[in-house]
Image 1 (cartoon, rainbow, N blue to C red):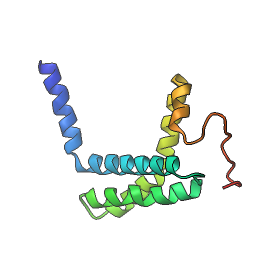
Image 2: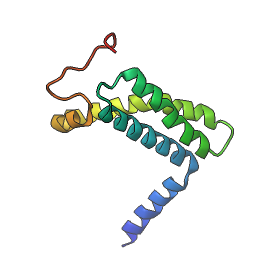
Image 3: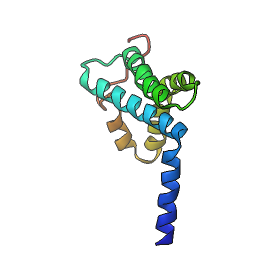
Image 4: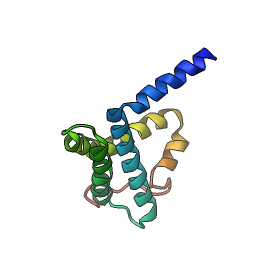
Length: 118
């Protein structure tokens, strides 16, 4: 029982850290919002998804950040969220390629458009 309690205490300490909470919530909100946009638009353009992902990641991080550099960390989270998503999907696709295809807005029978197409 003490092992479980120490694990819960460790998780509580990490979540109680406002810096971690700001970055984590900014990433989650940005990733969830951009996924929602990608799946609900008939043709999701990368520039539109990234343009929406920036404020979705920046604003929560900026509001939660406990000192005056929240805007800078918010920009970093907003700009970095697409790269976190790409890295996570790349890691998942190494072990479970069929699950990684479901995470993407591009269906298996479609090819992903080039940057010049969007």
